[in-house]
Amino acid sequence: MFLLLSNPIQRYWLIGLLILWAILLFGGFLIGGPADASQRMPAWTRMASSATLVVAAFSWYAFTRNTPAGSYALLIAVGMTFGLLGDLALAGWLPGGRNVIMGIAFFGIGHIFYITAMLRFASVAGLTASGPRWGALAVWLLVGLVGWYIVVMRGAAAGGITPGIVHWIALPYALLLAGTAGVATGLALQDGRFIPLAIGGALFLLSDLILAGEMFSGLSFPLIGDVIWLTYGPAQMLIVYSISAVLSRLGR
Image (cartoon, rainbow, N blue to C red; front, side, top):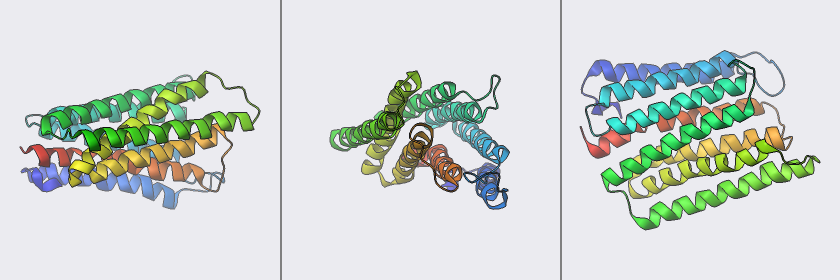
């Protein structure tokens, strides 16, 4: 994927950031202490791994800004930045402590940028076949809707909780998550170079369904927090590094 960048320094920089991200995420899991039964991974390695992807995304933009892939890279970089803000909000690292609604809002905005990037790219690249595009989107939106109902609403009912604002805010967010997965799958069905992007969208939805289960349904199993991050982190990485597939499709 990096051979499309003619400058070897740029290639090595992006490879280095990918290696650093993997060390922070997977290394944090391997060497993390048994803080509790749900998570080994230290908060600082999780936040640092997301910050590394922000640097990688803006690096991709800097290296491709004068190519047809530049606008896609910029939108992905901004989306990843909102993802980092969402991570910080949920970790309680922003002023005011942990704020779930703020975290959902940041992630939702990030997905709007992701979806915009993919839709704009699809139009430019001619990946607009109605069947794959709308079929994949419809399927994933249904998955998001059903997932929200089962995990969030039925989870609240099972716990004897009256759904509040955070439960309803989770609905448009679930649909945005599903939208990212759906649009990415539509691209992958038309061009195999975007299969990693589609996997990233699916992993993102899976990760957040597990997180929602923990928050709203009392879902619990050993290392659940690590499972959430070991699906979420690769999801974001695959979305960020999909810029290489866009560069390949559009050319320099």
